[in-house]
Image 1 (cartoon, rainbow, N blue to C red):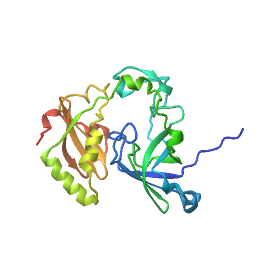
Image 2 (image 1 turned 135 degrees about the vertical axis):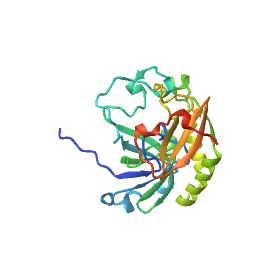
Image 3 (image 1 turned 90 degrees about the vertical axis):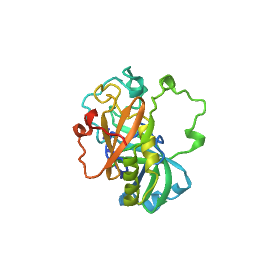
Image 4 (image 1 turned 60 degrees about the vertical axis):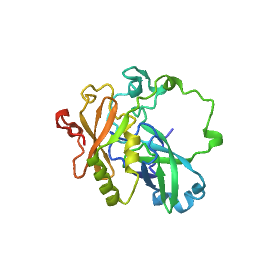
Length: 251
């Protein structure tokens, strides 16, 4: 049987610029926005007809930033704190076929563009398909959450320094948006750090993630994540995220 190549219907333009900082599941950060423009070859003026009547959509995506070369039968979900679980009992992006499934709130349909919120996908993600969310069929009230019910994800308190509050005001004015404080709070309360990375989990270590056109620098101490400052013009590089705890100053 001849193989059928998957086609990309559009690439997501998301507020998240890298994997670090992007929520691990959809709808955890309601203020996380994105736009998906359907390619002209799919005649969006016809193929999107009627979609505006739905409040949510399923996005089927391709994990284009995956670097894993070996597919392992067991993985370590962050919330299990080092324990393992079967690959197919998880939503790990490291899969035989790196395909993702995300539920997003459909804010509006304008021309060929879908305006979305509650996104958990990084900027540039190829979208393979869009399907409407239908509560009658897609919601199962008595469904079992499996092992997830036994391993609640650790939640952090979130504070914003005085300096960061000023940076946020400037960013909102520059970008023409609001709600950045709430968005960063939703992102950080989920604890972005990898629990298996001891260096990353040192109290007071300054880390950063890229959002919109800036880098959000934060530090975690005793269960509280504090937004220290917002920086523009910095370079996205994994090693440059980390700053010695002695250099962190909270205002």
